[in-house]
Image (spheres, rainbow, N blue to C red):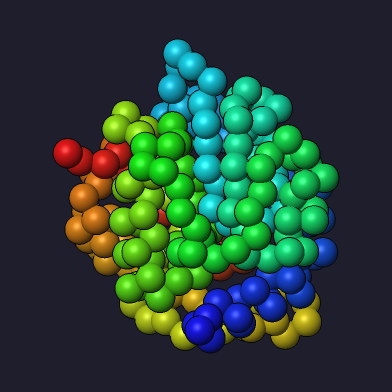
Length: 218
């Protein structure tokens, strides 16, 4: 039987997909631009010698998929819980292979991907399920591949159901709030090493973000 938080999050993301689809039509003052992302991904994540096969987990309305496909010459696969999000993402990245499902239900072959991208995703899972996600990603990423994760960081660790204050409609979803040390420990316990980290902030939305780029250990 499907867990309650998955049902709640599917409904939430379906409900605010239309709002989210307009968010990047104009890049926010504190957002990374498309050029910023191209530079970071090409220098720190993707392989230089081949066309990369990239998995994006939770692509939302497809901004990053479009960058991977059009700017970075990658082949992409995306797993997304929300049918409405996929509808918008397909418009941005029609060549992507989309799977509508909970990522924890999906099975890929070991060593399938050169890169995995998880943007604003890991906090949508309780910590135990986030651990399962990282363990699956460890199997799916190639030996020399890299994974990019980013999430907000907080002074105190907690999880529960919270209203998304930056969207209209009193939309509630499940949210895990990590401290930086807690996230670092989780990543390392799942047999990854952190090879790059970056801090960014959105003071207009009262958010502090931490980006990790990780590689799996032997």
